[in-house]
Length: 615
Image (cartoon, rainbow, N blue to C red; front, side):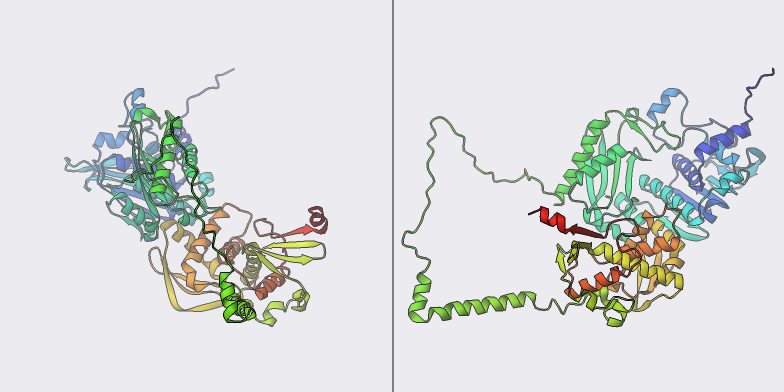
């Protein structure tokens, strides 16, 4: 029987390595940009075509490579970052495994031009599927330019499993954000299909964060600055009131390297306990500086998971640092130990005489003296009648105007024809009593007991079915805006909005691109509060991202649910009796009145038996 174990050819071995290192176009961007950072660049330009399928080009002004280095860099395990195994435990550079370029060259067509500052001429190398097609001198700028074309052209199965161009490009944006935030001393620019997405100059950390995520984040940032013998922590955390419903602004960096660390994330989240709104996620940009020998960055192929020595001690430092920052900005109560005056707390000894405190009273005081004086001058009945009339006026003033308040959230459903045309008449609920509890629940007696309705979820269900019907029937209700509103989004949200714009416009919006990351809104669905349109669009995108991974649901349904959730009545909204009746009627016209689109309970009934048992 012949031998069955054989050594794999380099081309096959490189493709196997590529499967581990290069998962999607964003992986190529990450590896090449990190190499540009390590080359000492002060400016890095990223050019993307077709979300990376057609072209990924990285241009830097770094140290460049000699002719020999330019050829060797494509070999497996070729690296300038480490020489011995011990070097793995004191690494401060990004790419060091020596597999990235070999992996990229195995599954794409690569053109590299590189030149050192001291050289008169550079080197150009063409490689396709690990095969060197040419190597020749070339006139080029100082630094290195990588052009990766036709990614996965020789691995069609991998190419087939790539997501939509919008999804793949959002992954690229995430990688650029991580690298740009970690390197404030480097300028970055990003172009996609000849459109500039990012232009991030060299700037301080706070300004870099604002440049990446937009000017709206400026009011959200609280500085963190802690120095210990073990670790230094700097950066910013977000204010609780600006917390988002999805992750996206959560960044840990150690020695300028982005990392994920669920254990440290828990330390930050515990510091926010009881001050974070429900169903929201905190924001943070925290930078750790630590001795490289105290961490291990080589435990994961993408090097985003890092192992620390003394993790529990660092966990405590993180939590204390975040709590201190929140306390300094009056986000949580804190004890001020820097006050000049102190409360004098006497020390008790055996000889201390304890005195009974004196209570000063006036034994001649009579609370009815005023009444007696009044009764001697006027009729006591007139006195009390006057006070009763005054109290009555005060109570009437307290409720004055409540019935006249405009209810914007239900303004589109005021007429009898609109309210009850589908079967339920006003008389069907006229006899019902409706009460609002804690501005959150609507209570009404029914035959079986006491019905409790979650008002926000009920409104979500009503709007969801309304939007879905409009979209499927192509009969959208648009209210034109008197003054169009221009909004600016961060790069990732801008790409998401571009992707789903036809679906959101089918629900009644009129949104169009206004250049870069800006959009102009000319119209909205009929029931939308146009005074808060920017927040509604932002909340819509956050809610949409929650359902993005659900491949079973159509984009139209996701968009309808996200918009219903963003534009439904707030928890704290006080409703008039007529509005509660409207909500009740419309809810029971829905095909599924008991549950929201995402399966949450809308209606609960406390039975007569349960009520009786309580007494």
